[in-house]
Image 1 (spheres, one colour):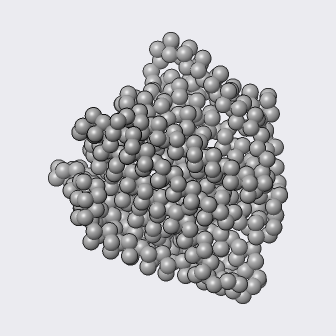
Image 2 (cartoon, one colour):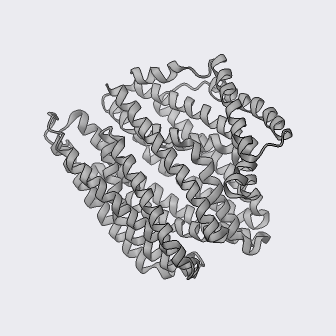
Length: 506
């Protein structure tokens, strides 16, 4: 039964993630055509501030809620679960209102002195109103993930995205006539409204679901101070993500200036928008399956750890690293050989296509880093993740300041390589050590890497000679290469159905 629930939840989250990312990319295409590359660049600057303050409002709370409620479901009672949830909501509301006040009243200072963009003031004021909604929504989603119910979280995200897009489409045309400043403010207003709608939806589902927990007959209340436990898990994650996001925000402010000094001039903001707002969302799109699995594994691993099932932790960790590597190398090959066509097809831009090709080799690093980071937090390794993220961010800023004004875009791509290599090695190494997982470098890394190159490079040359359109080229590349890729991996025993079934059986 538990296997069926896990598969169902993973399928729901995967489908939702794919839909959200696909719709997000299509929406970015529409938005780029409406506001231009400069508008996307301005939006990404504002979005950096948005990520900074929203991280403080919610980052570590969702992981803390998921882990603590997962433990209570295994050993505790309904009363304990409600106590954890209530404390978490109050804590996130306090933090959210502090962040909201600082953001709203500091909008002028942030825009003029930090972003060097006076046009960002209305949007930054508008984004502050979303913070309380973001915090509570995060807590409720953590609750439903711990309950092994992915549908409420998934549907709330779909509803949120639909509401956001509808409101933006209705408002943008009118406010765009007043300039990019008003247009960005309209986008952030839509985001706040969408989160409010999502909160209302989740709260109704929570009220219905909490009444179904009468079957729990464990301890009467948690054997710990709830607030202390939430802070123990959430504080390092929140501090890490907040400081990391703050440093990334600083990096995002420095990058356009560095590109401008390198000779890009007024095109610097457009180049920044192409990297952050166009290329990276496409590169991360195929990781939908992996992000869903890592999300669902957090309560499973937390429960297994609480029940001292070390073998299950070891097995699940090894298989997710194996699966991540195999999928990542496949899509790395796709972006390497079809990045130009993808960029032209989606955005009508050769520059975005060049970025997809240039960044394709670090796709496996990005995917592995993201998945391992999530599993480490399920193993109570949030302090390590905190130190790792700070080290990475500080290094990136130092490199941006030192090299970007001299090297321009090529230098920024090099910085991304260095950053992803460092964080991936640190996270994977720590996860292997903590879970005591054995890694098969040849079967899990070398063979998928070699297979992807040996299949896709010759195939891409052949398809190019036939002068297909971008869409036909991409479809044929995937249809032909994907089956061949997995056949070779099955032949060399890099991957088999038993690898997944083994995890599910246990």
